[in-house]
Length: 296
Ligand SMILES: Cc1ncc(C[n+]2csc(CCOP(=O)(O)OP(=O)(O)O)c2C)c(N)n1
Ligand SMILES: [Mg+2]
Image 1 (cartoon, rainbow, N blue to C red):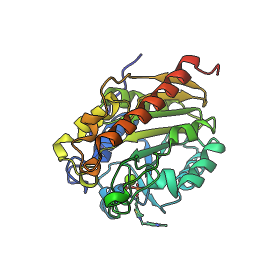
Image 2: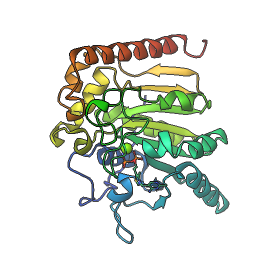
Image 3: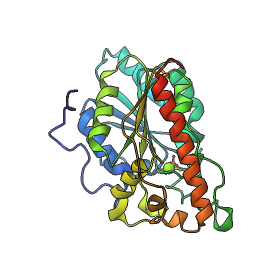
Image 4: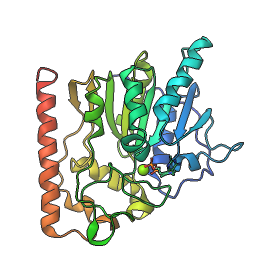
């Protein structure tokens, strides 16, 4: 396997508007190292709409197009069509959306875009809530989490939506998960997605939010690493919606992952056991899919 080609230059300026330890900002830096400067980024309303800076300023050295909250998939499709009409088939069109803009309000336009098999890379940086507007729950918020709309004893008691499975059901050519704590794996996946032209690619990117989750900013990458090591956020790829490849097998229990995060502080021992059982069940299902690898 060839190592990802890296841009010599960092395509994110210092002085961006992200919080200290923002996983989504680390993610953008790593992604652009591979995507390079022939990239257009489409950003629906989200924290990244702020981090990129107000026009005419920008924290990115590539063109940015801000889109309405629901419109990431549709606007990206339009940008691709416009570039194609200009004869530019080289530039990579990247939608860069939060979990609210992907799992919830943006889902119909994402579904439409990938069903048409648009030649775009859609990245969902998942910080597991509507962070830009004050930490409201989304359908990406995990079971057990407190948010400002699931406060106190009303913490979220439903599972996180499995977005990669939803994309796989569209038979999308390439869907993968990635984490800021596994940069080589992340950059390899962006390289794969960049080179795989002619159809839709989707990357579900785990992005710690120290502000919304109540963790110290210096723990951002460590928390992300523990999410993978405990199989809370498995690293895997799905080709054509059916061929599964697992990239890492976690062996840690979920307790040390949940414990440092204020959003999970209220959980009792039986709650943690229940989360462990759900994680184990999901991991087993995923492993079986990887074992059958398209035959099932
Ligand atoms: C139609 C519409 N409803 C609500 C908003 C307000 N709004 C802007 S960003 C945002 C939250 C975005 O959440 P997410 O997509 O998870 O990105 P994050 O802020 O977490 O990075 C909301 C609700 C909006 N811009 N447009
Ligand atoms: Mg979010």
